[in-house]
Image (tube, rainbow, N blue to C red; front, side, top):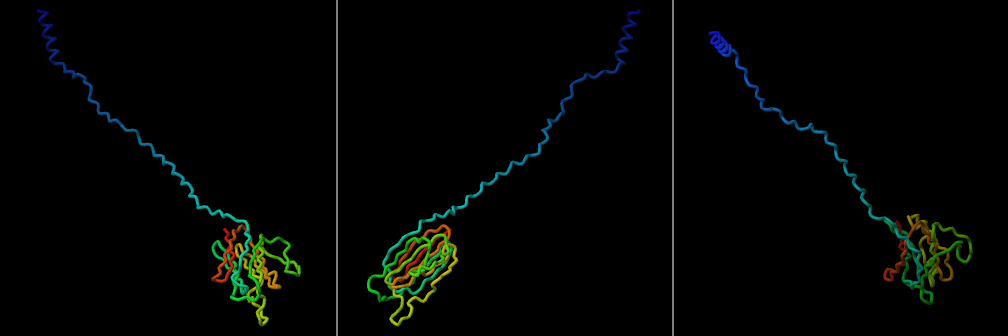
Length: 205
């Protein structure tokens, strides 16, 4: 009897006890977080390589020497002009010439001291280098005794390379000039029989 009563009590207690739910692992709801973006470091801008300017180097030349037959035996004018990178000195001749023989021209490198013709008087020529221009068999005056040459006899050009052209002699069918040049130059000489000119072309930087 006592055993039956104990079993009945245990059944009643079990029936009245609340059910304890089993603990199951809750599904994971964790979200994988991507790392916070680090501020981008701006790539250093490429430093442009400096553009290489075209070479402006100037190749200077040795002064020339020259000997030629002239367009005529009458020098009537000398003109100096300047331009971009080039100065010119043009000797202009006119038809005619009364001196016997063939008129010729010589251009050589002049060395100081510079003197004025047969007088031997000192002559100042502006420039770092000087050319000597000599024309032979030139008419100095015409048949009426008038000067054949009507241009300037001391041309102070003051151009980048051509600084001065000065007549140093005019005697006995000879006409001579000194041509003063400054800086690095490259001189060429052109004779134009049709135009009756002899031109010094003086290139410079």
